[in-house]
Image (cartoon, rainbow, N blue to C red; front, top):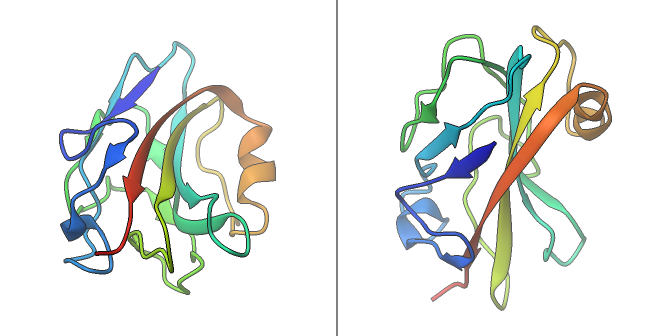
Length: 145
């Protein structure tokens, strides 16, 4: 399985328009080679370099299996569910590091279940982990200018 983007390259700097210093819009994401048996997908965007540890920028689940991409700025595919992130909102919250260059892990999960219910930022990882078939990630970098 693969996740990529036409908006940033793996382990390269992200454009400011995808951050708090720009339009704070989500980048385009492309999903390829989704494994056989996948019933739904989930996505997380996490900054492990935040002062308090993993900072959650975006969590989505129940992404329909036939979806090949999420467009820049959305909308999300019908049926997809967003979880309240560490900004206190459901939608994407872009990079906004207090200092230095941070890494932003965009991880796609192929799951053996669909129509998951009741996920929140506290249980997202443990609930998703029970259903993972395969994962893929792309890392974007950002430093405030």
